[in-house]
Length: 374
Length: 184
Image (tube, chains in turn green, brown):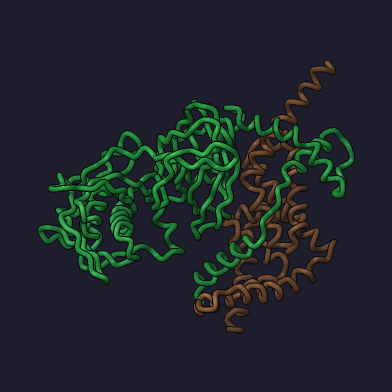
């Protein structure tokens, strides 16, 4: 075992071991004890804690309001309007909302502008929702990037083959321009188009008109290659078939760096955190309209330390709710999370999910989704 | 005057409550898990971290900064975990929990994933070897590889010099390597 192996194993083992326990909520007890100590009263004995917890309920309400108060918290005033991801599920969301105590079924999302991939489609077409991955900033500072997924309505020929559908999805992923009003996705494939996609059980070949745009960093172009790999594999739905690129004119490199002689694939599951943006919000989707009075449940994926992320709900720029979400697993595994936002009054909202560094308290990943309740 | 003092006190309490709520949201889980890795007793870990938060709340007027407060919480948690081990003699429970953990992990492995089983067995040995390390080495390695703290942050949390952190880490890793390789 090399020194690096030992350290990697130790890190993995400690994280896995730590996740064996689920710490109980004790915020009420802590605040109750803190207030007792603040009044110079003898500290609460542990056997009195349940009573203290009950007494602290009113207190917690006040504290939560304090956190929500704009300016009351550093994080509460941190605006973020970049990056997002749209639906995760491959099944179409229900069209109507269900009032009552159960979580609302989401309405049909408002998709980004419908796009016809790579020029007009001759003959009869059918509208499909295709997965497309894009390279976007992971934090508001824009110094790190990851892949976000969008589902885009697109016209494909009626009875399209898997290869034709995959080509349509690749064309969508290569054109981030329709999203510029929503998300500042990078456009590393600007000026390049997909001319063909062929599929065999062991190889997908994507033929491109050029090697990609100039002016992007190695980290960004690596993700640009990955976005096409993820997109074509997702559109085909046949697993992680290796992907080969062919560039018209015979260019041997993509972006002058990545040889076309080799094949590309998604990273192994335990390394996918290097490629995917750490936080996806999959519900509500961007600009979704939800019925007033119904319970809203936000959901998504994250790869965060201990699976812990924080969320904040703002209405017209004012923070009204916040909390902590725990995903089904912590990084390097990608977990899923859900947050019950309760019933919301009519208005414009933004749901923001972010991860705070255990080391220094900095926001290391975040994403936001605007939606409306009416 | 008395009323003004009363108002000031309420404001201080209010500010400390907000700070505590923010810090709790961000760090409660990871600090409890850190303590648990050190004492191997969840209730004790939760009480340890709870006490640290209460202490932090009472000192917020001196800390006034999330980074300082977090460093203070880490120091409290590590020190209290150490005291708990010393005074409540949970060290034995820790060691016995290692063998239970080995059994538990073995029983939950996917039977078909031989590679994963082998990896888990190595992980369990590594964890058991970590538990046998001298306390200080165990603390340093846990802070470094669980919380990913820097040498200076570990030095602050343990109230030792950065040089000592380096020495403890080096010795601890060397022992772990020899333990794991010796049994594989």
